[in-house]
Image (tube, rainbow, N blue to C red; front, top):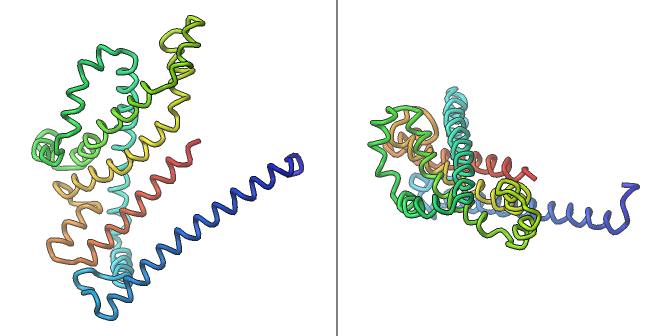
Length: 258
């Protein structure tokens, strides 16, 4: 740190201290929640058969691990989420770029985007199964179709909200449409794209679990469906915690993009 000024060093220390405080209170809130939940179940204030408790969740997790099926189910769901997320993100950004580059295309497609975005995608489940078969392809497509329209709309709205002064300045230098997009629109919307990808993660997760509930014989969604059918609430809540961890991992990976 010898090359940094005192002010910069103090700033870095402040940022580090803020990060430590945020992480501490995040963990504290989680630990308090788990402790209160466990105490309520142990003292009979809530029915542990219906609401489960952290100790039962841990036992269920260990049982899945010892049975050798835990990582298989997690791996399937994680794979489906990754593929669906990449497809919807790439296609969503590409279509949003196309809509920005050609206002006529946007005017033509805008009502269709709104209609398809508002459709309850689970209603398309039977059709998706017929089109793609009762397997992993249907699950991935379910995740894709749920997230793609939200991605397109949110990224496009960011593109058209770019500061007009940047675009005007580039036009004064006879910049092409591509140059305006490359040097003004895209850099100005980097944070907006990252935010859209964060939303995309949650939408993909919803779609994948919906798909697994409908057709899958493996994955976290399948375990949730199986647990609900045999009224094993411990298994259902354990799977929900696993999904929360997967969601956090995906969110953290996107958040690392600078």
